[in-house]
Length: 394
Ligand SMILES: [Zn+2]
Image (tube, rainbow, N blue to C red; front, side, top):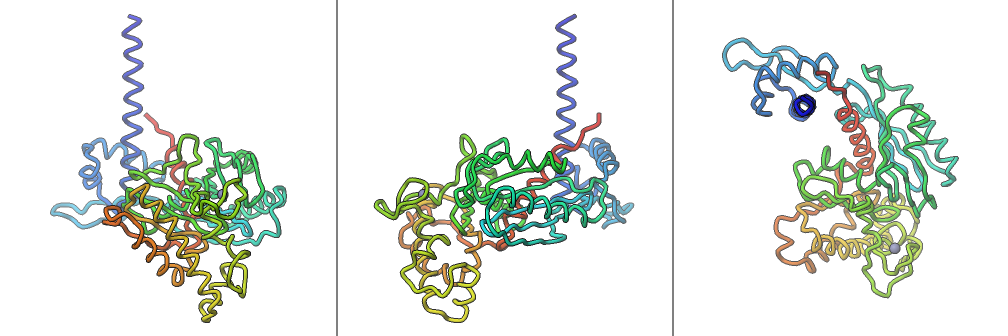
């Protein structure tokens, strides 16, 4: 008897799990490919029509899927089309830069509804936290009315993050062990996801940018430092403890300049905004935006500096290509906007130094999402976390 009871409980558990997986499959199929008829969902998921109908009815009741006027008929009655209800809720995506706080309010499809930028005067923790809270509260207050309201806040930060959402170390902010996720969750009572800005950027490119349908991607975020988001087999690779991708501290000059990390000759000392203060050229400005403006006007020192950075970007990118054999490399972050002056020298180094087999079917491009990639990726992580937490009713 006892054994049978146990067995019975196990079956129920499995049924609940199977239903949860199937419902999630139907939801994400509609989310990715809408508009779809019920029979198309059945074909695409391999689930029978009765199961699809039951699950769709539940998703409609939960307002995550909506039915919209008749679609094309393949003979017979025209089917009602299913749409993902991208306005079932809203999410907020934030990128904490060294000198700026940027935020977007997005719908559940990742489309931007509102953008906010705020210049930070310094990196004092209390000041930055207060500013962040104000920015989030402002976006929540102006968000359009939706069935679920603002369902998540995703944040990309310039530092290492652990699985508990603690910002362990952000050298460019001088922050250590900040429980950012918990602080904001407690304050707003809304789920918060926290990730390294390069990881968030990679997720943004994978879902909305240049990397859709790419399985092996390296997203190199070049700005105040360099970090990389690594996608292997379609999944973000975080390493054993979540700290993978600190490529900015990959050594490219054995006896090079000393770095704040304790090593020498780190990549970001030669190919990020850190070069502006040590440039061999007489730079007309010491920030990327102004340097780009000068380069556009033909300033030879600014152009030469970018070309030099492009060369060093190429050295690091070559190491990454030889290590990971990716399909696609995307250069993102603030420096992606200097593409016209970085690309030629970077590509020349890569072409000259990369192993021949690794070059086959490899593409290198600059981010199409520009400086918004991280925010959109962070917002998307919140969407996924919300949709994954939707209650399954049996
Ligand atoms: Zn270093």
